[in-house]
Image 1 (spheres, rainbow, N blue to C red):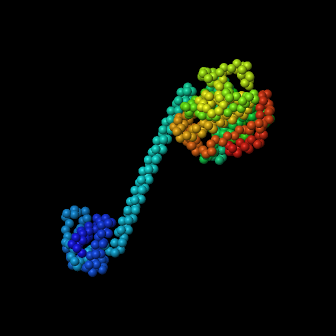
Image 2: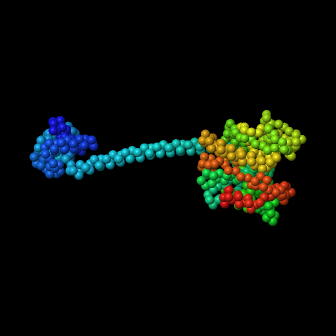
Image 3: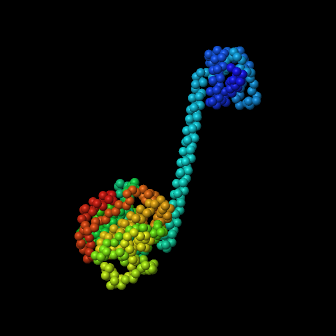
Length: 467
């Protein structure tokens, strides 16, 4: 062994406690070379013992350097290894264990580092999610305050008996009224009766519309259990006698169709327009579809402008006399009409409201229900756009403020937003009864209504809306 390697071996043997894996490997290689040159075959305690007896001062030094490993290298002393001496070294078993233990430590350190990186990314993502939720809540509060300012105060919900489905799904009764209940002394009427069904996993959303002239039995009103009262009359009667029109209509749905209503939302004309404009400041693109009017197909249809009396006429509005209106099939006389073309176009809240309420084409109330379902489907599909994540929260806040409802705010922010982005297959729409699946009959007040197969539609309602 040359002088350089011998010095290196001596240095390494005096610093065993501080060697890296690579230095230990070098130490063992030099040691093997040393033992081979000088014929030392046993590197165990026997060799170490021979070496201590021959060179006590060297062994004493090694013991001192091992027991005082924290001392400065400058204070250490030692002689070069003699040619006929074995180097003090760990036993064979210890030699084999040290690299393995070191490898285990290195693997553990790597795992710890990976774990720390994962935790770091998890915390980062969690912070972003919390920030998004806080911003959404802020937009919701902003929209809510805007709606309260529009209405001139908060709206007090009516007393309501909530009924839940056994499968965890949720039914929401959505009513479109000419006046919100309790808004004035006038009796409120509803021409839109819909039940929005949300499955437990929020992936299935159905909209079932009940035609307002459908004859049903109304608890406490109908005589002898015979369906002889229009379903929309349940709402009006309930408002007129006890200010509980929503609850009476919910009880009517339960008695006739077995439907459980958990939440309700009543929107008047002005509120509907406000909600749409807050959701879509640039309007909603929709394919306007009208049937024939008095047998004739019209490219531009005059539609009654319901907000003209309270919000003023638009430059595009037309005033028709009673005679001109009658010629177009309007039995209610003349007034202010908005001209809406057939086909694709953008509509603001006011135009969309008038389009959804129109019922004077040859399909009558069935045509109106189809347009209402079309509007609901388009609005929900547009809200699924991620761009509307925050504006949607603001609009939901506005909707909450301008709607009479028992839906808690937490539902809007959790189930409401979750349903928008979680539902698959879009909105599934059904009408009860289906077009022309009825016979004409008179109600108890002498008005013309729709008599339906109650057994058939009760089964269909429970299939679509749960029990």
